[in-house]
Length: 87
Length: 237
Image (cartoon, rainbow over all chains, first blue to last red; front, side, top):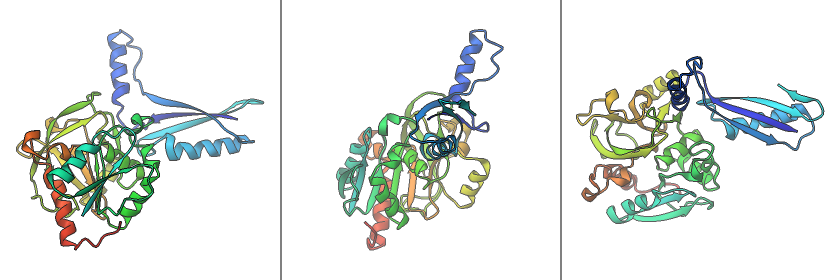
């Protein structure tokens, strides 16, 4: 079972790196890119049997290590090879 | 009296802290490797600056789970004085001993420069021999020192008098132009509610002798020594 974890700064938290990237894109004349938020992406290979277990385990490690809940939020996609991606 | 300086893979201010303790202040000092399970009977614990685990994932996030950290947390909870400097501050934030988190500097640059900080609280383990409002000239050297906490958490920190140092100008005025990284409310250093755990982004150990450009950082270490002497050194560890 695989889980994908996407970690980003919370909406309420200023993202200086994302802002710098957005500014660079604007100097490149990509004015239609209104805003950029930079984040992190993790692929977890999990030794579990069910989608629920995968989600629970991914949630736990995201809470404890992958994300800092004070400043970041995360989203998890679980991929069961037999049925495809569950969001 | 013994200072323990915890060494993580990637610590690079450990020797500076050791030098300040052992050679400037003349107290015993020991390095404690992060894989150790005890603190060698230390009376004061310093989590030094650097780039533990190469700042992988988030600053301090992996060091927080090093074996020695269980001893550091137990020592802190028993009232032992713990000082986190720069990366040490980031590690303490990750443990939850201190609230909030660090964002990239608003300049998005690594900043290495002399700054001024104002002492806001005296009844902590590392400021008790300072004077209220004392302005210290101490260097910073960090890329992620932009302190963040939600507004209600910041209000709580202020109400509990946990803001120990604020960035200020040479006169001691806390103004945005003297804030090097965008930290909320100019916060440069905090303490826990028990006031024995103190952490700051500037490096007092790099400002311990006039030859370093400033000796203003000494008061941080002298305070810990003075407090231990007045307590008769009845401390855990």
